Image (tube, rainbow, N blue to C red; front, top):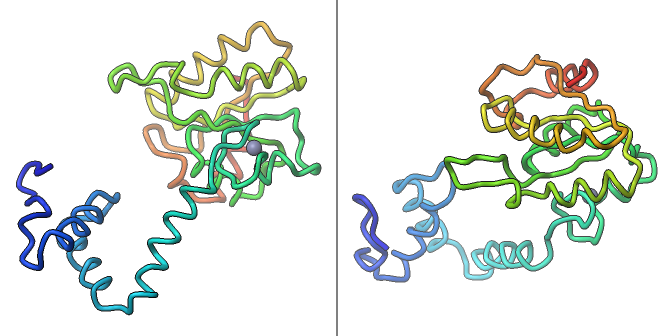
Length: 209
Ligand code: ZN
């Protein structure tokens, strides 16, 4: 398991169990070896019941949270809260790459349709093809639910733009208007880091694809 310069769990001075914990923390995004060590020390210092709450919270989300049957957003129900909300316009579908993009767009409060979460973008270099995403589910949805507008809100990156174009081509056979977010969002940036005013503008000013 040891990779470039990172000692394996077995080499930790407190023993392999602590080593494995440090190793696990260091796999989290934004967590380097030093921070992983600090987190492990924190876990060692708190009472057992408190430390286990973290373990239980992780287990609970992994056991209960899955993809929404309709939009592939994360939910602990069959349908997510947005798909099952009768006040949301089911005929407008905003296409995003990840569940965290839904969170970012929802924070803008500017969108009253529903979403479709692709699960990533088409990226030949990373070996991600159309079949690895929820594009089939989207097509089914457009065909069955009489969707009238699809808003492309993939990230303004090479892969994100390419993915939107690919989907737009597939949608040609349906009587659906295709729009995309206004380009207030700088090219190459990632949706989840845009501020909510910017996202609200981008949604309200959406334009023909
Ligand atoms: Zn849903």
